[in-house]
Length: 165
Image 1 (tube, rainbow, N blue to C red):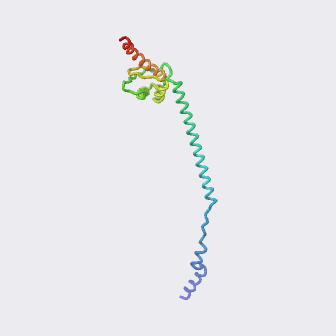
Image 2: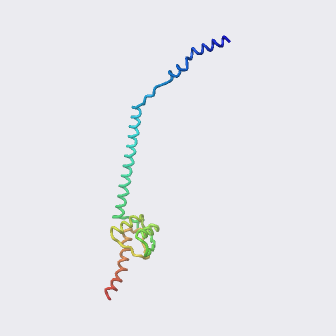
Image 3: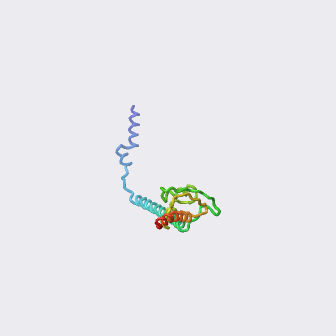
């Protein structure tokens, strides 16, 4: 038993007291101001670069889509090259210009209903209800012109009748 006591005394000499262990392992916390500042600067730079790239991408897309839209409104292209295919479309009296454009787009005569509507407004074309035969080689402006002429020719006989009275 004396040996056990001696061993326990020896073990306490090697390890020290509990207080000694706490004080040797404790480290004072000092905030790493420079590390935080560098991390914030890096994140700020990354966000700025991402924002710049997104802005440039949106500008590019806007410019290309805007150019395409302007080109199609003022210098439209046909869906197909000559001779094209004939398609029949019926425009009802209750249909708006947008709905007429949708019908033309559905049968493959125009590429964009939006362009069709904008052309009708800009060039002040009116769409007359009826059944039309168009070629896929015609542009949307040519189709609008035919519809407008149909409206004008349909309105002319009525005006002539009212003038003769």
